[in-house]
Image 1 (tube, one colour):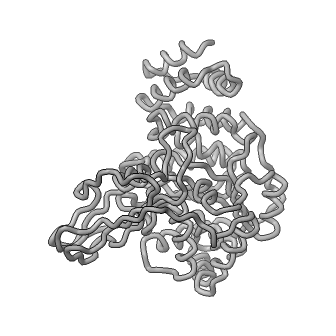
Image 2: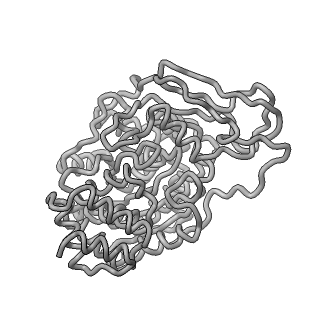
Length: 422
């Protein structure tokens, strides 16, 4: 076997065998297959796709490329994963909610893929926060406070770690087989048995339409069943940003404020739904009972206090979140109603301000980002501030019409959750 033949085979839209996929994964991890060769194969996969069997094999050998975390001694264990979107800080809000309801949240998270930071980037924005827990410390924290979030360790799904970093800088992020195998290999290797997946759909997400979202959901549920895992998928709207803050330290701040003030916005509504399905799986109770528990721990501030406890436990100090030197307001030129906030353009702008990566070794400016001052269907006058930008760089050119639209009429039919697939 050799990698050139395998690349050509996939380029010609032929199905790879289990042995060929095993060969690719193992030899990429060992260094025999080079980054440029793997990049070529990844692009062929993006263009030509994979069969379900190919994805199951890819997931299997990515999972087997490192060690397996055994969480069988923990009860009521539950996990959540989002396919990523603009302003998606749900993990920071959901984990303390679910933990406060009596479940145990064991979460291994990644860095940013594409324009915005991942959960680990957000946590690293908190001075002193330790994102690199040993397996022993990870399990100890889960036992002691009911939750822990750590970076994907060096020896868990090693192949995924290498492929993930390569996809980020080679234009190969938007592929259903690669998304499914990446997420599920990590989840299986890190001991997940109950998993809620938030599949983002829209212009600001990796998945652009509902047809692809259905394919991804059904594929991950199928992989879950193959590995004795319960999986629930929520298909959620990412045509508009989630919440008001984009950028790492700004999103940490919004997560803290959301649990304290419980605003009636799209971010908290989604977090309540995701938390309810997690508690349903973790405690094996009805959705209605689970939602009741979720609302109670938000209202009595247990979840807020759990988030602060978690941050302190892992060494973080939220009073020292970094702040940008430059603050700029983007104002409205006309009156009407804000009908569109284009997620992808906001993500690109936030990245240009310093909050994202263009290369896998780029350093992020944790303070950079955007606060959205007006939301969809808000009445807007001339001179109203729509966005506030935070950066330590020179301000890039801003094309307002690409980022937001102001019209005479309200926008209708804004759906937060399209579907729940179990």
